[in-house]
Figure 1 (cartoon, helix red, strand yellow):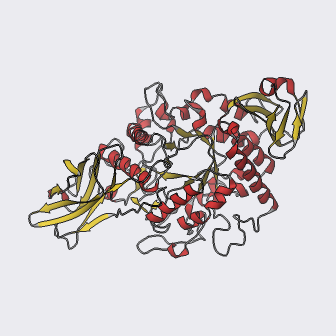
Figure 2 (cartoon, rainbow, N blue to C red; figure 1 turned 90 degrees about the horizontal axis):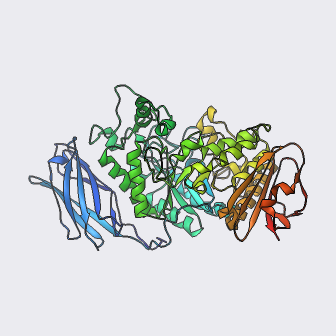
Figure 3 (cartoon, one colour; figure 1 turned 135 degrees about the vertical axis):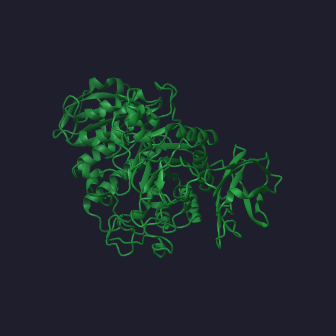
Length: 617
């Protein structure tokens, strides 16, 4: 762990005697520090200050040297290419900016990497992810709710305002997540979003290197990572490189005219990611998808600018090292210029072979989704280098199938058909599947608040060959419709605020059906966490009949039989049809009820019921 590492890195923002005639001009240097022994010996610093381009630059160090100084179109920027020598020692090394008699010294710091053997574990199909929105999960430190210099204060009465959840609140409840059976934690962005409104969600970044002070500090974020690892929870950092807030300094005062994608008048993205994989797509449609803005206050970054991509790549490396991350979830992965993002992903995978990049690919169809998973044989030669992507097609199939009667492609056959398309993926087990998340309607709402359907869907999602992700509150049947406003699908988790009369962490005040749902998911997750067959086993399924779906997970040493009866009637299965799955086994123990079923000629399954049978000889 990194418990013994003291991070000395501070954010390099210095004042000096005026270059440009102002009383106290400032110089900003990013990344704020770096590490030796990263597997790459080059580093590009971005330096921002009044007329900094007119300064002479030198570096007093025998551990690294300036290879090249790049002047931008904007004289307030310099880009410095540094070479770090093999075996470089940790320390602070003077970086000198001089103009005539005026000079400033920046002591740039190199750090030694901590023991990395138990970090950067990555994700795999043995994991189960808990997704939470930090502002809405738990307020562990009310003192930081409102901060001097931050434009938006807390207001729990406003569904789209800040509610005060923070890093300390998450830290205090890591035990809850581990006890539930989760193995990984994905937190929506906690990086600074200093906006006057709608700042709680985290996707309008104003400082790529700074934790939002209303959530805590960088050091508190790092402590959270350490304690999560101590409890067996991998940490996934949510990043967004497609866009950032218009007030972020490189956007408000860009170094190059093409740093941000510009239009004569405001042009929003068409949000049609399918065009990126469409061999017949019009160039204008592709351009609008890639270069259109996400929102009026979210500037669209141009990943074709090589200096921008270096800035973003180094930002990822910095956070991986600082926090000891296991994975990055990259927001809106299909939106940016795909060449630049592929370079980013390839660089991260080269430096961290076991690390996972999870790309959000919000697309409707399997073929379009599969295009974005790392592969060498796409029709256009494109390789995203992203090993894990989101499985939205299966998400849609689950709740739609549960809500309808069986038809040729309806009912549980929807799920069957999506899984039958797994041949399109390079590795189907590297897909993240989910009942809901922070951008869609709540799962319990999607299944029309039917507890039987809720259970059937979760039994399916936690037993198919995927990496499951559960959104905070799903375990206690939280509801909300996306079209009413995102604030209503991101409500406060009960028990996270002082004075809450309901506490989901302890169960106090929860209704009977909420307690039942929470206990059901906890049993499934904890069983899944220790069962290698459901984690890694091969998959074989049978076409659903009578809205009953039967499939098997199996390895050389074990087998599971899963039966989902979504019909309104008890179903009697003729077991001979499924013999290729259970042949050689005589009985199966249901992990949900503990009941043992004898495997003979027939097996009865009650209406609206899942059976998950561990087969025994």
